[in-house]
Length: 126
Image (cartoon, rainbow, N blue to C red; front, top):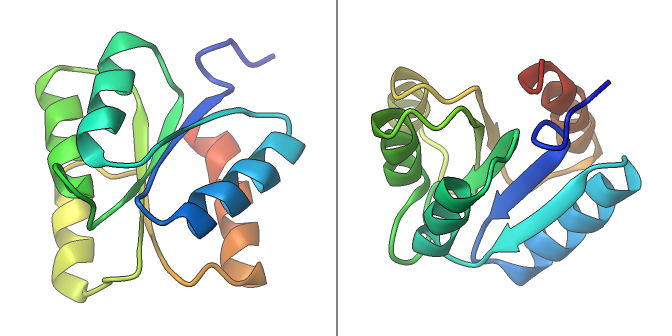
């Protein structure tokens, strides 16, 4: 059975269409979902309250997804980070994985990628 921390997901993305859509989909899957519109707000939430997973956009105002990931590692915050980005490159994927990202998914999120994401989250919460 999932703990409260494990069932909480933070979506950190400055694109409202992404946060609205992902929030609805993941809420329907039974997760407690919160949204942060920039990287600093996301980091503040992650430090203040336990989340099982953060879905972080690579490019956001104030702090990008890699900066969030680095701060989580530095502060030893036990939240898995999945990078979700429309700015995907091999270099950014390698950098994200080196920094400890659980996985890396490229936007746009079509049905196949959404199914992959829905399969990844329970594994990240284990």
